[in-house]
Image 1 (cartoon, helix red, strand yellow):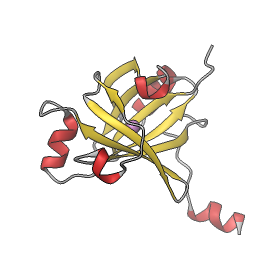
Image 2: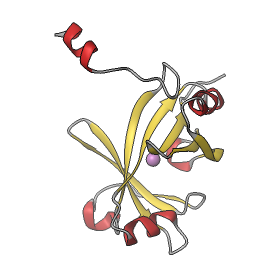
Image 3: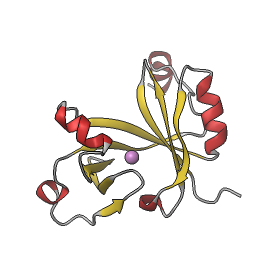
Length: 141
Ligand code: NI
């Protein structure tokens, strides 16, 4: 079974071998409407309110635009719900360098994120794979 799986599923290391799936970002008009009991975090840097839920073992980040200047507002206007996939990486600068080899470019340099105890996030984009969020793992020296 394992051998069969490994033949069928090719492993790609866009962000380094230690990159791990962290969450999917989903646009919603109102977090209160979809998940009234969730703790809502306001991120003024990213211009969103956000909350995390777990669905079938997958962490989903609900993203609500903070205003019409929020990138999430534009996505909702186009009815685009799935916004990004986030990977945690041990070293965000190395991950940015690594993914350049695979056609990604960095569209927002690492900044501390209030949603992750000020761990750094960065945004990279590929015309093939779309928008990816990178989140630096805790405990980086
Ligand atoms: Ni995210």
